[in-house]
Amino acid sequence: MSFGTIRRVVMAALILPSVVMAFEATFLLRLYYAEYRKLEIGKHHAYLVFAAAKIASQTMPAEARATILYLEDPSPPNRQALQQARTALDEEIRAFPKLTTDYLADHPANVPDLGRMQTAIDAMLRQRRAVDTSRLSAANIDGVFKSASQAYLHIVNDVRSDIDDISLLEDLHLLMSLLDINEAGLELAFYGALLFAGESLTTEQTTALERASVMHKAGPAQLLRSIDNPRVRALIEFDRSSEGRWLDDAITSINRSAASPATTSVQTWDSIQDARTELWQQTISGLIADIRQHGDELADRARRQLMVLSGIVATLTILTTAIILLAMKGMMLIGQIRRERESMILELRDAAQTDLLTGLYNRRGFQSAASALLHQASANHDWVSAVLFDLDHFKQVNDTYGHDAGDVVLRAVATIARTNFRPFDLLVRHGGEEFLALLPGSSTEEAVTVAEKVRQAIESAEMKLPDGTTLRVTSSFGCAGMSAPAHQDLLTELLKRADLALYAAKSSGRNCVVVDAETASNTESPDIKTA
Image (cartoon, rainbow, N blue to C red; front, side, top):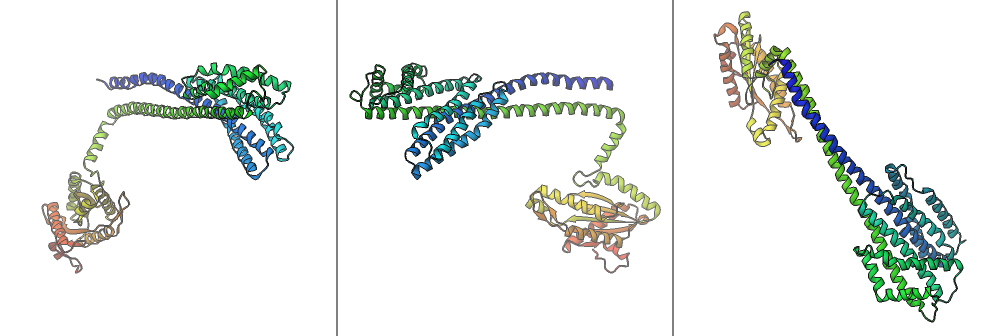
């Protein structure tokens, strides 16, 4: 098969599956991203509705009640309670624009009526200043706060048409119904108390009372649609209780204009209305908390969806990159095989002659290089010296710190040897922790000098392990030197003598340089330590 055919087969085998995978991946990514966006949008809806509803039905009314109490009794505790209510409302108002920004990012065309909200907030701030300067009475408070609450509820209505999450939409419909019914109940409680106290209502108050009565009458029918909700069930049970029936009868008497202090007890009316109001406030608060929880759940699901989406993108990126790299590698290999076959063979041959750990020659590479070196020395009648050295107690390093630490030490010793021997000296990892150097054109004295230099460098070197531990090791050296024509098998004889010298160095306490006795007898140096 020709190289061109091989190239086409490799390209087809790699690229065709990747094209199919790319189409499948695109479809899968679109599905997951659509689901992720849906969850993100639902989360933004839930958080926006929660914040607006909480401000309208809880935080804003809380400041209204605290303001009324303060105006009726401006004592320090009431002043402190008012300040706390204002602080809570201000924090929620400041956080609200961020939620509207998130909403507008999803629905840029559906801008809620933020102007109405800001106008209501400005009116509330002016009213605060009037309260602080004692220019208002408690009777003038409800209107501004009610207007501000309605502005936030209006935003909820604006958002409601964009919500796709069925569960969130059901909770929101229920919340709006409860808020309307509760507002009617509060107005009935207020105006009813006035009637039962014998006071007359203005035309405007009478109209508000009639509107509240209609809403109150329609309320139970609306609640029955959500009877499976345990919170709603508690409201229905209250309406069916003796207190609820008494309250219904009292409202009927109001509608018939038959309510009077003689027929109805104001204390009983206020007591039952207070119980009903507390129950409804708890129910509304719980439902608002459910909306917030629903938003949290959507946020968690969106985060999980994003993690899945990120995982898919990362996996597809890795796979696509791998395919591209494989295709490029395949083409490069084919081209390299075609263009540089001989060069590859030479590189493989060199790799077979090198010790992978230290980068020095291995025994196979050493034999070839040493043969050429000794042949040249023999032709020139030069001296050749051998330095054989190994690490002292190296087994303890492996046993104590592990073989990875031993590898670190061996690499460090190889680096020290390369640095301190001459560039043209032949270095080889002779086996395990044993190293050998052939020094062409070097007398024994010169070899001993170099060996001592290497020994001191190894002894003083600090070898840092991956875990941060620092080791020091020592080494023992055996040296031998010969004139090239002095022996027929020069390499074998040199190694034999150097090995004997190394053995002597080990026997004499290690961490020293020893030259074999026969070589030393041919030298004139009295400082050489002999075997």
